Image 1 (cartoon, rainbow, N blue to C red):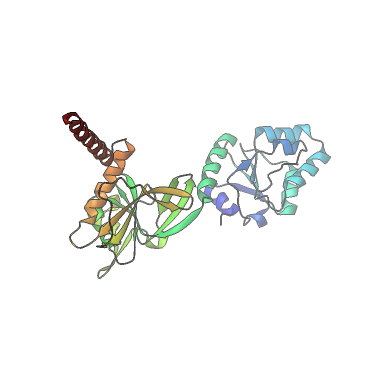
Image 2 (spheres, rainbow, N blue to C red):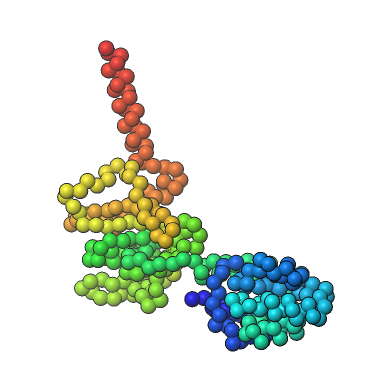
Length: 313
């Protein structure tokens, strides 16, 4: 849960008053500049948002309102669900707002940042912090710049494959458990839990620290997930895609990403296959598809055969 204290710690805000309320939850990714509310219009007051006072709001409050209006508007701004009120540009909060925040335990903060900059940084921070999240059992690596999430049943060899990919120069993000946040539609960011950061579990060997063994260049703290490779033990009675025309996807939270089903059996170099899958994914993003090209060649060949047969008749 994101709280006001987390926001204070991130941006080094100065707490003016309302310290009792710094453990309030922040639930909205939006921030508000309560200009209309200061004039007295509270019909659509988004009280669950962080409230920002910039130059316009502060000067209007101080210079255009009577003392009675200041007190009234200050208390109307401080509701139970209001996370906090922040004054930007180094402005000192008016005494009426200080009193209202103190009595209602609404954190009142100030910063030297400009309103424009704070809105940009704060919104970005809230979007990431409050993004929907989940955990998936798997391994996440950066393979040729592509975030590849390797999934499959326990014991199929995901960590061993990750170790071989790391030795080939690719970078490990997370092993066994991947924390995933959907920071935008179709944008999934994966990272490791702090407890297992930089670690790989190899059955028969135990826990190894890949950064200690291979250097800081083989690990990443976070990576966008762009491709899923799902491993399963080879089933003789199952027909697997041989042309690459099947368009599989996997849904994580509300986003879908391309997925490749790779059968595993002795003798198959799965690490090499995953490297090729990542390179092929990059080519497809650039509009190059070997499967589509082969299909077009095949159709053209069949048509030429048919045309030849018609002419001979």
